[in-house]
Image (cartoon, rainbow, N blue to C red; front, side):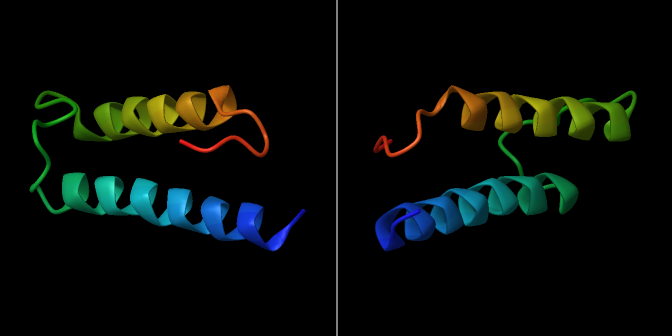
Length: 61
């Protein structure tokens, strides 16, 4: 894996963590789930992982 790919991967991870941290802190754009916050957070995580899987190796977002 090249340096640029590693740097992009870390940037993507940091962006995903920022979204998750905002949700945990209650500062997100909208709550994942008001009735079951942990299930909502899990769904959000799955959405992020699904998006990461769709990214082709070496592609630029």
